[in-house]
Image: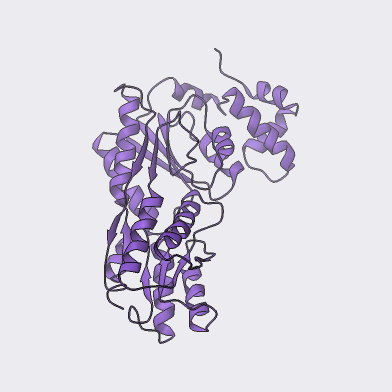
Length: 330
């Protein structure tokens, strides 16, 4: 099958060639509806933007494209560190990009990788199955991390969020806590939703009759501080906080201490991920082997590229409860 051209995309999307060029280059002078049609047409036809990319696609680039929802913070830096370690060990380069929370931006970031890489690792906890499938280049091998659970024809790596939340709630209840608050992650994030749902279920199992308390957060330190202020001013009565990631736990810890609330004597604090900073601050957390997970994902994709057999497994990784000083005693 011959490679699609920009004319093919324009004809398929029923727009001019100039509109295709502007849309695919992210220029502002394109209507949102036109941009969506062009992106959908390019994805459907498998369009590679330029001749240089087409020539590269005919040979191995020995590079892996990595697209993450963000590049800020210790979680992502640890993840990238593990992937880079594995890629370098197998003589592959790594091209890194991000896509934030926008489906169109995801499509643009992934399309930009075509012709430059042999395969893709995509972390997409914020995209629906439809948005992710539309964004993925059709002819480029990919591995999905923290993506929709309905995708079963692409290799995936996910966390067992339900088991992790259950383990944390069990620990807090066994240490004597009875009013546990959960600071949820960003709305629309798959991991955040699973952790919040599992928290509610665990509270109902371990503390019959108790009403699960879930606060909105966004994985940032600031949202943890906001939760601490609500606790300090009496808006929320609790004796433990379980945050959906360590950065929110850190913000909450600092906010509680600034308000004169003793941790853990008055309020226990726990997080999720076990980033390096959580270890230094003595925060109880669910340990995700972040760097090792990144390295494992990279090795899985390279194995596929090097012909070691088809792989569409959905791997479910377990987090480990690590109890530290922020939840000891009561």
